[in-house]
Image (cartoon, rainbow, N blue to C red; front, side, top):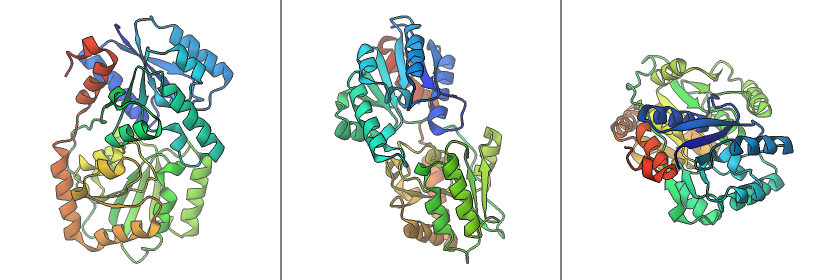
Length: 354
């Protein structure tokens, strides 16, 4: 096998954690001399039309037979079993999180996606996933042999420690992630609506056009709670603006209902920010206990209590921040992540990397 054909559905430049992971793999491989290409697939996945499946087949067949097909799980998990079987032995599947566990799906749709992904994964030569929690989930719920699963934790770029907001201003809360049901923003707004007597301001950075209904409902909820002046929906921003948002934050909040890893948590750690997050999916392990207060996903009361405890106790907040900054030095780097995935895709070539 001589090269990696990395098949990714949709616009790889979209500001999501999964696409960021994919982009960085390709960039790091270019830097270290691993031959790889981006194979663009239709954006309709995980609900492809027959025409899109045909286009996907043509794209895959255009690659030399000895290429390794690394296929992002947003597409591979939705492959019909017949297509997956036809690619048996050629595919390394990259699973960020199972498609059927996305919040907001109709029960029959979720079950159909779970069954399809379970079947497709049987035919993959190997699976790469982003956290120990996801490896356990794939083994227990999808019947994947653990020996076929490799963990490649998302990398983190070194960053300066956050400066925070003015000492006499409201505590600056930051949340980062697209406005989709799984991110749990309605729970965060509900929690903050009970903390009107505290001084705080929340900025949510994340695309609002991926699930228009979720964006509409969140905007309406904020207005109904009378919090328009205290919650800013900043939308998708460029890297410079995102870095500024992290730098000006005092507390990072992640109310997600489920995460396959939670890259924003390690980005917050890299800047020495104290964290309040849920235990949804892998998030419980991604955020170290010393740097974060953790609550059950969907529990607005517990989330409010955790946030209030840090607003009211600057010393405790500082302790968490110091622990986060200490953790930052040991976070994985993207070069390590890319080397791990390369070794799975190209065992002979990849062994020389890292």
